[in-house]
Amino acid sequence: MRILVGSLPSKSPWLNPIEPTWGHGKRRIVEPAQLLSAQEVIDRMCAAFDCPHEAHLAISKEVA
Image (tube, rainbow, N blue to C red; front, side):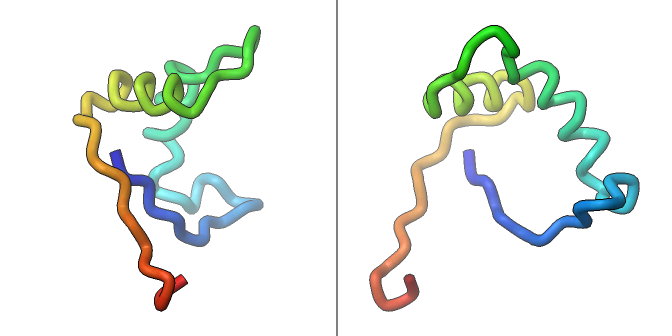
């Protein structure tokens, strides 16, 4: 799974087109009783959004 970071409206979630999808997905992933590890979050995201695991992207030191 690849997560792309971008600027989103912080005060107007209705202006963000991904918000309805993410809101429902977040409820399927998050568990309020415990803190999840990164691998558990990845596994739950892939299950919730029906997507395959993908390799992590490497950023070269020249770019970073």
